[in-house]
Amino acid sequence: MKTKSNTPIVRPYSKDELVEAYCGDIFNPRTGMKWLQKELESYPGLMDTLVKLGYKKRQRVFTRMQVKAIFDAFGVP
Image 1: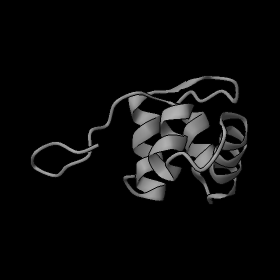
Image 2 (image 1 turned 60 degrees about the vertical axis):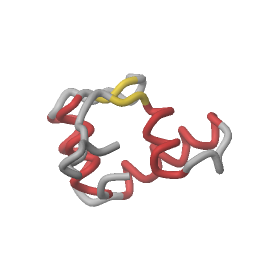
Image 3 (image 1 turned 60 degrees about the horizontal axis):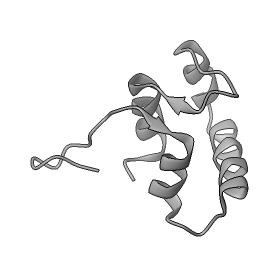
Image 4 (image 1 turned 120 degrees about the vertical axis):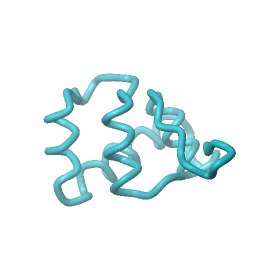
């Protein structure tokens, strides 16, 4: 999602929202969560950054700072 000036809106996102933003509806919810976790873990340094920002594996919503780190890693969906 972007503003009128074409800059990304960094707001809290649920894991479901991020899966949908990056993949559309090609995954069912369970498969999408596994995909997201695999991608987060495979990107060099991203999990370390997320953990430093307070990420816990079972959390359902990413904070704004965590979303910014994900956007910086994968690009804005």
